[in-house]
Picture (cartoon, rainbow, N blue to C red):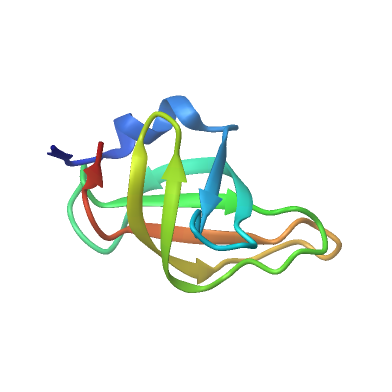
Length: 101
């Protein structure tokens, strides 16, 4: 069953880990650090998420499959965002598809 996700679905998971490209040999773990409305379209389903990777790692950009134990799997578009020098890499992500639970 497909469910639409909005910012209220993601907010309880700030601080938790998500897996990028869960089917790959080298999947990447990222931490959700911020949830906000997207300026691209109307809330509540226009969600921008900010994820943080580990220091020194490169985060993928473009369309990515993301998984979370409670939320399921979904497609997101990862875009670069500002990072302070010496800080962990960050990406902003826009939700592309509803989740398949």
